[in-house]
Image (cartoon, rainbow over all chains, first blue to last red; front, side):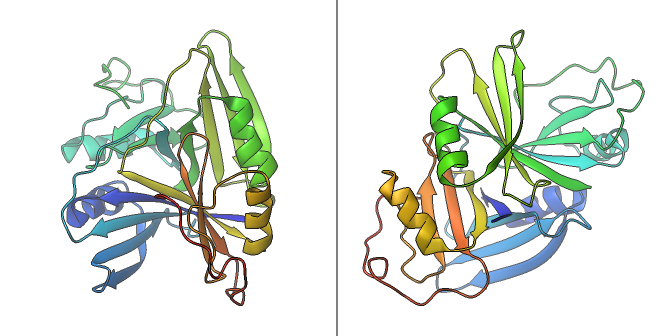
Length: 139
Length: 139
């Protein structure tokens, strides 16, 4: 038995790839267009960790997606949580839970999927502007 | 960067462990009780694939969890999709999407989290009772 992927639905594939791939740093591994089924699947994964994937399902016919409380979040270990959060913040993404402790942060995808970022290895020393940054909303 | 886990919230920890661990076959790796935060975290993974985990969050104060369409499902490869679906069905779990093609099935957790089961390697030959079994509900 083996974990393959978590699938999330996305309303806008470009915006989602901008978030998950270009900003968060996941790699696009493969893409499948189904003109018959009117959907596109895109598989992403952390570089070097290709066996644990994130599947984006984009249905060509518009649908609004809302969240539910039974799903919590996706979690990734990252090399430098401050550098990544700075990159995300510079790109206009809200850091819902800033990495005040040099250890943990939360952001949300364009469709409200909560993503937990955890510093790989030891936590980084507490550092401004993160240490005194307030949380925003829920995550 | 590395995938760590997907977190789902559960209303009943015993029922959820019965589903994810005892029936689906994931292994319990660790458990963390937080009397202060009034929650319990349980980490599960497929045997031999411990680095890609499922985190169950059980909040001690009752809350009803509903689903949202932005989350799709968790997917696992399994050694024998017929044997596992038979085991699940015998235990009273609805096979929402039976493995008619010897390749893919869907079930739901007690909190409505959709779980995709995919036959590892080549699909199995089509076989009754699966080949003619109707789908039930959504998944």
